[in-house]
Each structure stands twice: as structure tokens, then as C-alpha cells.
Amino acid sequence: MGFLPGRMMLRPCNLPRHTPIMATEATPITASDHARAAGDLLAESDRKFAARKHLQASATLWDATVQAVMAVAVHRDWPCDGSPLSLRNTIERLAEQEGDHLISLKYVYAENFRDNAELDFMEFRELAYDGAKARDFVRCLLAMAC
Image (cartoon, one colour):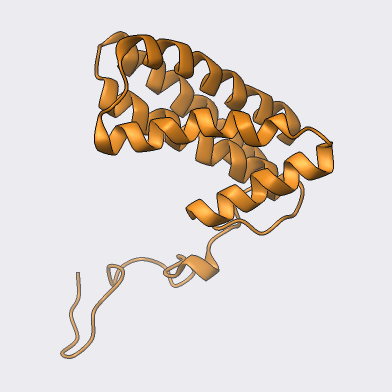
């Protein structure tokens, strides 16, 4: 990599100039990209649960939820930056638009896995029961995004 005094190089000097070096230059992520990532993360969380890596599985299940919510937001052309408040607002808007307020309640199952990844408070039965509910919720969101 080249180096100029007083400046940080973001890319090697030998890369072509058209290589995106800032997020604003990158191609926007589509709903199908988010949906594909959510599906991959869902499968990964299943593997981690099977391997009894519950904290990692919880974090991965939460990441799958985030990607599924982002897929819905992009599909419906709604703003959503992935922050907890933005995700919650997207879910509330979806529940209102679909006329199904259970969507907001089902989102809580997924939020529990975000919190469990940090605090490790869920017992095995909760992991199994709430995990099934959270995975179903992610699949439901993906159906709405496709």
C-alpha cells in the first residue's frame, strides 16, 4: 500500500480508480440481498444452536431478524438504518399497514435473542420455544419482502 504523509490511504495504489472507496459509491443493497443474508444467518443460527453455542446462536438469530426487517424496509422503500429505533419503527409501520398488530408482539421474541446474546438469561426451554417463534417470524418477514 502506498502512503502519503498526513493522509490515510483507503486502498492500494495499484487498484483501478473505479473501485468504490466510500459507502456512498457502493451499489445499494437490494431487498433480495437482505433476504438472502437473513436466510444464511438463520441456517447459521440453527447450526450454532445444534452445537450448543447458545450465545453465538442468539446473536446470529438476532442478525437474521435485522436482515429480514431491512429486506421488508427496502422492498417497501421505507427508511431503515438498522438501529434498534429504526427497526422498531419499521415493525410498527408494517404492523399498521398490514393491520396485524401481532407483528409487533412477535418481534419481541427476536429482541429477546438480541438481549440474550449480551446478558445470557434464557434457559434451555426458552431458547427452544422462543427460538422457534423467532425463526417463524423471520420467515414471515421474508415472505413479505419477496
